[in-house]
Structures are given as structure tokens and as C-alpha cells.
Length: 594
Image 1 (cartoon, one colour):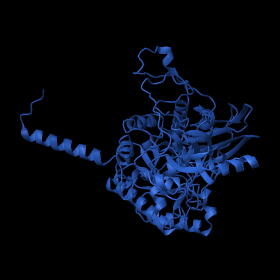
Image 2: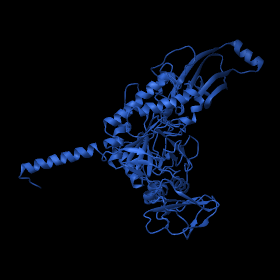
Image 3: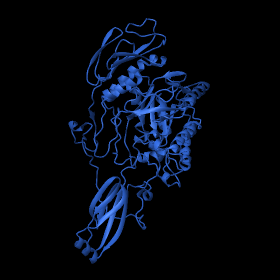
Image 4: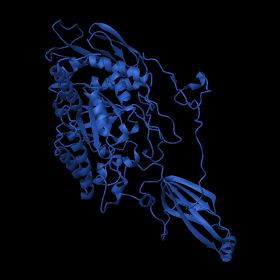
């Protein structure tokens, strides 16, 4: 126990502690500016080569966030990336939710606490295999609205939400110039895929979105992904499996890879996609080899589509994405470890990478090549040793032959390059890493099941495609067929599913009573025909019941239903159960009925 006899010293100590705490709570970094040139982002006056890991905060619980961020940093990430999710943050127009899994401020602050930067992709259309692409369903009910085009009702709502997010980040002092971690923002998302469908209105919308975003005064650069016509002050970026050949639409913009697809999402009944880490590492190394500056893994942690957030149709609850950190927050080896080693090797090259405005290219064979970066741009690199005065030199040796190992000579030394690989030489001499040579071990994960204590240890071992046990807490409930809730109502004709449910339920019952006369039966028998139910358009699933018996099921995307049915003489109850299986993530040009 420490006793302070001098109250003045104690008071001063408490004041110092308070000041220190207040500073650390409000500022994650010393305030710094973010700009860019043709080579890279310039952070606090210095070019940087940056590795980013995608983590969608609502696809994990807040309790998981600190560990996910820590594992990302340990794996070599400099930046954390996430979309915002409009329908999660504004489930009812004008009523906002920034709590629990949607506590965006808390998530960004945790990233800053770990000394990492943040890339915030506002959208607000995000796709992300998220329900309705992140749009709130109430948006459909605004009179005269058309999504993602030069439409005043849509632009008004979009600007209101984007402004809300930017203002919130500014109020919380989360931008870099305020001492926060946010260094980049994104407006819209892969709009270039569909811009042409809108004609001139699409082009006008891109210009409007860019000007609107820049006018918010966020103080950091904005990007547009898959948008080759991004206006002058917006950086156009690449989303793909390989982006090493991508060049932005202006020589004054850096090359940024906003989505490196290290896996893929899964549909019900589909296979589990897997991207080998050797290929992933090759793609990353080639990107930095050929002049890239910021690369973001989509995803570094995929997580879970909780509740009804999974988009569709037919996307599963898991969003594991074959990511370096799996759905449960565990390292997925060897992917996590191999990429960690890759990131460390790239960091060893950063001094040379940021110093050179462009690399020197050298042909090493028919499908083999080198890119060399050095600090002194006046120096010429030949197949000889550099002078001792050269302070930094890094090289990437690539073999883009998919099948054959090749030995090449570089600067008087021989290097064996496995097929489809890149060797990284931080000092232009010694190989620190080769993308095809995996040193990380494959992991076997042990899962403890508190509900089943009798299970032995070997039974707890699981792999990607196996589950160790089924929880003993599961139960089934048999619901009655037909209309039985308290919200029943009667209307003439069929109604659009989504207009009725407002996305609060995946299920909607339709019921009508049909009378079959003796003449009807006689006519069918005489003409050897059967009654047929015809519905012009439906999606995703329709189940047809007559008097409680299932007659048939239809599934598909905007399909016409032609279903033979059997009615008994007299009265029969025809019941239709329409189901949505995740709202489509790419809303159509005009808002179509569901």
C-alpha cells in the first residue's frame, strides 16, 4: 500500500493520469493528413505500402471484435476495411441504430486502439451478399424512386444517410486529421457493372455521387471501386482475383485493390469455395511487384449472416469465405500463417517500394520476369552487383508458367522459381519468401462442447466439412398449414409479397376458397384435362397446398408458375405459401415486385 503524505503531489498525479487517459481515449494517433500521388497514399507526408483486412462488424459479435482486430494486426495488416450497412443502421426511416453488432463507432475506435488505419466503404449500396444489398426495404415505398440512378427521391435519401455517417465519424473525431484511424472512404460500390444500363442517367449519377461525397468535407480521399470513369478527385480501384495489371484512370492516382477475393460465398446446396493460399499469395506479390500500393483482402474475416441478414437468393448463413480467420474467429491455417510471412517480406521491401516512382522491368525468360525497386532512381540495375552506395534495393522475381519450375539468373546468381510463383528479395540478393513454398502448418481445430460432456477428445476434432456433434438443445415445432396469425386481412387478388411483409418475415400465406361443381368435374373428365394453377411471376419459393395437402413446390428467380392441381367436388381451400430466401443483392433498374 502506498501512502501519499503530500496532497499536492497526489493531486498533480491524479491530474496527470486524467490528462493521459483523456488523450488516449480521444486520439489514437497524432493527427495526420492523408493525400496521394501516382505511386501511393501519402500518410503524414510519407508514402506507404499498405495491407488491409476486411472485417464486417455486423458479421461478428462485439465480444469478438478485439480478438479479430488483434489477429489481423498480428497477421501483418495495417488497415481494417468494412462497409456500412444502411438497413442495419436505419431499419425505420429516421430511426437509427448504432448499438450491439451495429456499433460502428466502437468498432472503428477499437481498430484505432490497435494502431491500425481504417477504410470505411459507405456505399450505401454495398452488395456484400447482404440482404437487399444493404438497402432498407422502406426505400422501395418512397413515391417515384428508382435505385442508383439520376433520380431525385433516391439521391435525397442516399445523401441523407451518407451525410449521417460522415458527420458521425467527424463528431467522434475518427478521421485521420482529428487523430482517428480513418484514412479512406468509399462512395457507391461496383456501379460500373451496371452503369451502362442506365444510359446518360447513369453517367450523371456517378458525377453527382462523387461531388456529393467530396462536398461533405471529410478531409480524407474517396474511392470508387470498379468505376473506370470515376471523376478526377475520386480514386478508381480494382475488385477481382488478380489486379496486378490494373491501372487507374489517371496517372496522378495510385493503384489500389479494394477487394482481393480470397474465397467466395456459398449458396444452399452448393460447394464450399476454396482458394489455395499459394495462388492468393502469388496474386498479392504480383500486385506489389507491378506497382500496387494498397491491397485489401475480401474477406480477412468473413463471419456470420446473423438473423435475416443473408442476401440472396439462397445464400447460406455462414459467410466464412475461406478467409484467413474463419467464421468462429480462429486462424485458418495454412492461409493465415503463409500470408503473415508474405506480409513480413513485403514490409522488408517497403523502403525501396515507396522510394521508386516506378520499377525497372527485366526479362528473365519466356514467362519469367523481374521488377526492381531502388532508392536512387538514377541508378541502373543490370545483371551485376549494385554499388555499395545504393541504400535500398528490392526485387520481385516472377515465374508465370503454371506448370514448370524454372532456374533464372539475376544479378549473377541463380534462382529456382517454382511454377506460378513470386520470389521476394528485399535486398535484391536473398530470397525472403516464395509464394509457392508454404511454411505454415495446416491446423486441426479442437472445439469444446459444454452441452455434450460425454464426447471424447477425438470426436471433438473437426475439419472444414465436418461437424463434431449436434447440440442437444435443438427442438422442432410443427406449425399449422394456412393462415393462423392475428394479422390476417382480406383483399381482392394476389398482393406482392414484400409490400405486405416489409421484410419482417420470409413467409406469407395466401388463401382462397374454391367451389367445384358437378359440371366442372364432368367437363374435366370429358375433355381429359385437369385444372392448372397459373401465376405470372414469383420468386424465390412457392408452396401450393389444397385442403392442407402439399400439391407442389416451385423455386426460381422471376419464374412463371404452371402447376397442375386436383380439387375435390365441393369446397376446397387453396393455400399458397410464398417464401423469400434472402432479398436479391443487386436491386434492378426499376424496383420490381417480389
